Length: 96
Image (cartoon, rainbow, N blue to C red; front, side, top):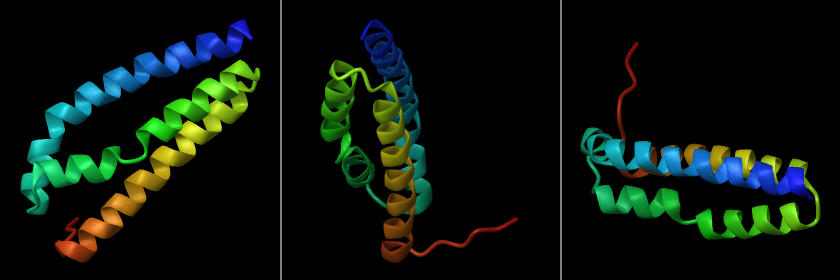
């Protein structure tokens, strides 16, 4: 259980660092995509409370593999779905 809680704590630190990076880059990314920063942030951050709860429950049940898999999978889905939805709303050209 101690290992699982340590992994959740490490994940919280990484999540905080990622949030800092996100906050720095959301406005430039929204400008490039031609959407509002609020809309982009809202779309991306929509699933985070559920992920925190899942990580806490997995850590309490000594399942760090479940917590890590859920975090990685959820972030991959959020990133790809967000990019896909933005491409539908605001078409953009990808150059080499």
